Length: 228
Image (tube, rainbow, N blue to C red; front, side, top):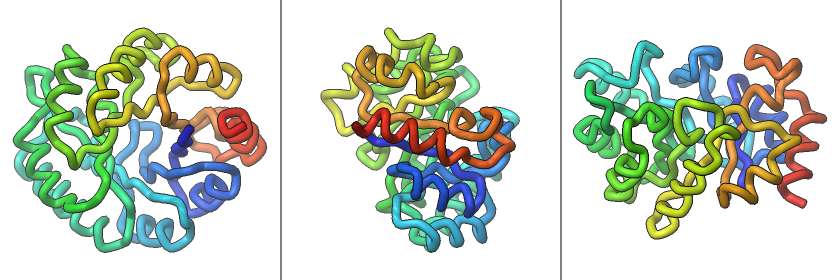
């Protein structure tokens, strides 16, 4: 089982690695669902840890429908992130009719080069997720999909996540489950969905607040639970 933890600072990143995280998703603006962090922070985090760092590429929180200048900004950010030695980027784009924006995705994948690419929770706004997964499966540069199985928290979408895992099993894609997960129920969730990667943010922080630091004891307990 692979455990991905959200980091918003260098201290978060170091704590996460020490306490059992296998990979980081580096973001800023956690209360807005995550935006692109400053390149200085990206560089410092990559230097400070040995586990893979995947960096959010999202220019604003208005929507996942992007203008031409938004896409140019995202491409420039990806180019800069590549230079830091980060392992991957986390991105997503939709059309106005609620489908994956293939044109924007292709443009961003060109900038990503050999970086791993996670399609983020824009996926959870799709009308038809199974169709969306089929679309993403055409792009070998996209390595995983972060999803809660729809608009509800992941624990309330177990049947849908299981369907996505089953569909992805015949492809190169990995389903990364996140949103609303808690340590107390994670073993049952993994058994019921079949996921091999899970994503935690606020639930491993003090007061379960995105604006608080990571709680080392809680993260260690989670890591022990899933890695035993």
